[in-house]
Length: 282
Image (cartoon, rainbow, N blue to C red; front, side, top):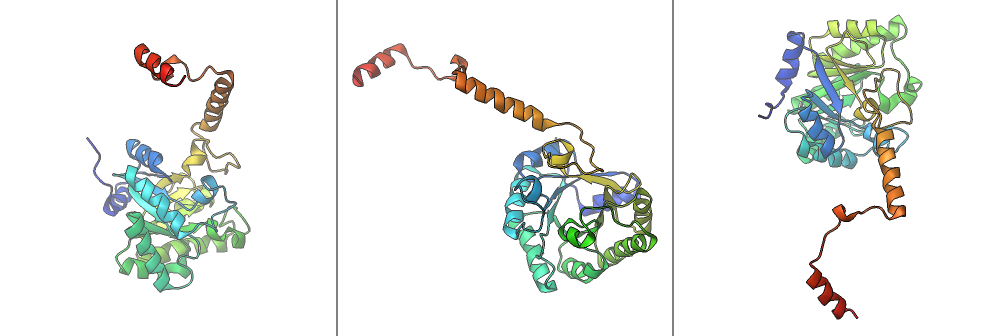
């Protein structure tokens, strides 16, 4: 029997019941299917697809069209998890009007359940406007990959007291603006705990320690499919890239040796039909 659709209310109730939330990324139909089969609570179609799927150096070049395309694919496979569509760089930064329009596109054309955008207190008015328009928003603070260059690169945030306090203030501002949950990335574990305690909405960590309300990882990192670099906060539960690479090399070897396809992989023709055909092509 299929699992009931996860709702925003389910996500918020999890924090009240002190039940950890499980979140992962997906960028296509197969991973959407597997997320549901694994009973993941939340699936993020993240702009991290720019790096792990498209081969870009970062997330800045990812477009609305890229996001919509991948959200559509995930939605075809993911029927029960809550699906988050990531708002790409500059899709919400220039004006609140454009932010609402682009958030609407992700939901109308992509089909996702909610949207996510990066930024703290400075983007609270944008979050509030999108929520007021009837579109649920997940916030993202701490390390924000779209603006990583302004933060000194992909580095831990909140190192000193002032910076840590700002992250707590950002979380409170997003909560006040109506965000239903918050992603907190790459901060010291004690700060992760403080942020989770400072707001009533769920705080889902990625490199934010164990004392937040849930965890999210980039699936390609988690399963060892993306090997350019592995962030400190990633645990690789398996490494499927070497397995796939071995299969590809074996396939190449058998094709070159003419041992594949074998009889078991080939369609047969009745002997009489073959005789007739041979006469026809003489």
